[in-house]
Amino acid sequence: MSRRSLLRALGGGAALGTLAGCGVPAAYIEPGERAASDRSRQDKKLTFANWPLYIDTDDNDKTKRPSLDAFEKRTGIDVRYTEEINDNDEFFGKISPSLMNHQETGRDLIVISDWMCARFVRLGWVQEMDRARQPNVSKYLDPLLRSPHFDPGRKYTVPWQSGITGIAYNKRKVGREIKQVSDLWADDLKGHVTLLSGLDEAFALLLQGDGVDIRKWTADDFHRMCDKVEKMVNSHHIRRFTGNDYIKDLSSGDVLACQAYSGDVIQLQADDPDIEFVVPEEGAELWAESLMVPNLARHKRNAERLIDYYYDPEVAAELAAWVNYVCPVPAARDILASAKDKERAALAEDPLIFPDDAMRERLVIARDITSKERTEFAKRWNALAGL
Image (cartoon, rainbow, N blue to C red; front, top):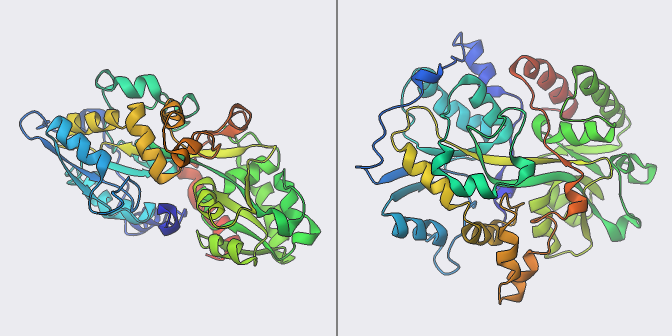
C-alpha cells in the first residue's frame, strides 16, 4: 500500500477560512521573532512529524526504520518520529494556534505539501535554514526543485520527496496512446474520466492542457479552464472527482483515463502492466512535499543535520527504493544502478523515480495560489467538484 493512498488533501483552505470566520486573523510573524534558544548541542534529540508510510521500514519489523536508525547511531541524536500528518489542512489546524500565538509546536521538523508550505512561508511561521550546515542539500538537490515561486532559493523548505501529476490510463482498454490533456475529452471516453477533487492537486495540469505557462498563470486562465471543466461535468463526460480512490476505479476498468500521481501508478503497474502513466506533451506539474523547521523549534541544528543526512545520495537511494516517488536527489540514481539486486537496479531506469531528460523538459513547478486568490478559486472549483 502506498503512502499516498492514504492522502486526500482537501485543497480548499478550510483551516484558514475557519480561523478567519471565528474572527482570529492569521498572524504574520516577523523574522526576528521566529527563533528560540537552540538546545541541540546539549539536548541530542528532535521531533519529526511526517505522513504515514513515507519512510523506509524493515521488511521483518515494521517498527524499525533502517535509514533513521542509522542516523541515530551515527549522530547520537534521538529522533522521536511520528506519523501524525494525514491531511494538509487538518495539520494546519492542529498547529496554527501555537504558531500564530508565538508558542512552540513541540515539533522540530515537519513535512507538508508545497502548496501548504507556501502558506507557512507567507505567514512567517518557519525558520530559514543554515545551508552552510547542509552541504549535501546545496550540492545534490535537483535543479528543477531549487527555486519554487513561494520560496526562491529554497531558504525555508527542502523537498522530502517529489512527484508528478499527470495522466494514467489503461492502454489496452483505451486502444491507443494518450499523449495530451485534450485526449481526455475524446468522445469514446465519455463517462470514464475522473479528475482530482483537490483544487491544488488538479488545476495546474488542466491549465497546461489549455496551453498556459503554470509558472505565471492568471485568474482569467483559471476561470477559462473552469468553464471548460464545467461543460464536461454538465455533459457527464467527467465521471466524478476523486481523491486517491481513482486507483480502484482505474484497476476495475470503471475509469479508462484520469488525473493521477506518478507514485500511485508505480504501485498499480506491479499488478496491471496495461496501466500507463504519461507526462502530456503540454507538460505536467512537478510537486514536492517538503521539510520545514517551524518557529521556536528547540532543536533546529539537529533538524538541519537530519535533512542533510537524507541528501547523501546513498541514503537518498535507500529512501527512493522504498517510497517509489520522484527522488529529489538525482545522484541517487547511480547508487541504485550499481546495486547487485536486479529489482533494485531496475528502479534507476524508472522515469517515474528518476525522470529522463525528455520528461524533465516537460516538468514545471506551478505558481502557488495566493491567500487573496484562494477563497474565490476554491469556491468555484469546489462547486464543480461537488465538495
